[in-house]
Image (cartoon, rainbow, N blue to C red):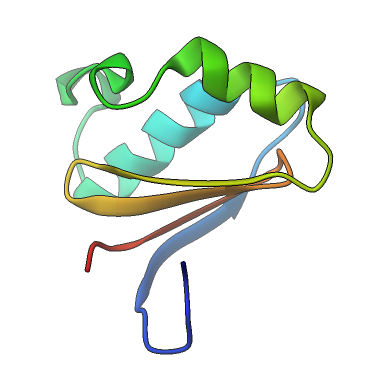
Length: 86
């Protein structure tokens, strides 16, 4: 969970037309200053299909997981917050 002591690396809102997983991988690539295609597949960490389904069908959904040494939080299907992992 993100608290006042966690340093936020990146925070972004994205369009509902853009798939969550695409926005998420682009955000991680931005934080790590790398090409999105150079990152390991997101599916090795979390089911991309399940993530999309939860975001699309959920109300007031927050999903947090680790990917590439970062804590990723997706809020309400339109915001991505990336923090240092604890």
